[in-house]
Length: 330
Length: 95
Image (cartoon, rainbow over all chains, first blue to last red; front, side, top):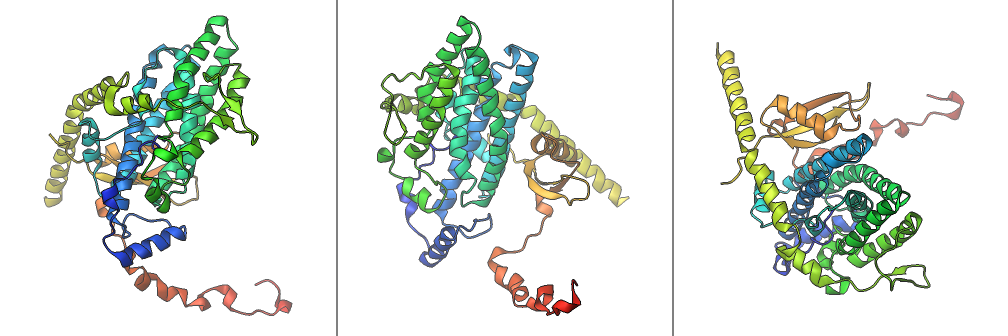
């Protein structure tokens, strides 16, 4: 899900290599046709999508870490089974997305190596820690809720493989949000300590979740190309507002307080939130969030410790294929 | 050191008895057996299938989208290949 904040393109990419082909390409986009891997596309379209889809994939994979943190300490078998299934889904989402990104011509291995080298971004939200069990509820309810807001329009993205991957992801994501809300509901109907644990999680996750939608529209310089190419269908602020409007009544149902005392409701019925601290967002994006080093370190460790498995599988496959050749020759 | 590439496979799943296998996506695996196991984990976590095929992506020959016209246009003008091209009088009834 987690691409809204990441989908900016470089200004220098936007020159057009072949005006006639680019015109035909734009006409196909305008006619709501899907672009498929072997179709001609502008180099900047390919580059923007490769970056966006791979960063989305990295986010799914890194996103397994904060939640994986609680698998062994889930409060019941039911919660543990659901959390395991959810974390497994995140891995699956990462893999669907890497497969979609690869159709643009960069291998998964290269994309992963870029992430491990710290050259590719992933969603900043995963640089925050999961301090209590309530954080698992807040992540499902809020982080996945925000993800769904962002991902549903991506199901209609102009690039076929990305759109198809997103359809699958969205179907599975709904379970994630509901299980998170259920955790929050149970805690908020529980004892005093449980309720305060739920409130504390909401207090800590609310603002980072609003930042997931990316910089405000007036500060974002590169939205135009993605919009023209129908990669992006709604602006950051539009999606953020949709999310806030959907979430405030849910918080009220839980009996929890959104940590924004100045929030008001306008005449159109929209909830007007206070200014967001973009300095915090920029700091986390620049690598200074609470868990940036820890997350990247965990990914590198897993990759390095898995090297022998990749080597063994490759050696076994090579041995088998030699044997098959030898048998065929007999 | 760059991570070495692992072969790519295309995954096809038969969702119910009587239906054809349908392409659902792709994955990386060192050999066919690992590809089948990975396909089960990645594409059938919610009972999506009764049978899986995995095919090395390199074994697929695809038509060229740039030659779409040459490949498919001849069929578009041959409307007499469809039943609705033919008039059957109402009195004859369903045919």
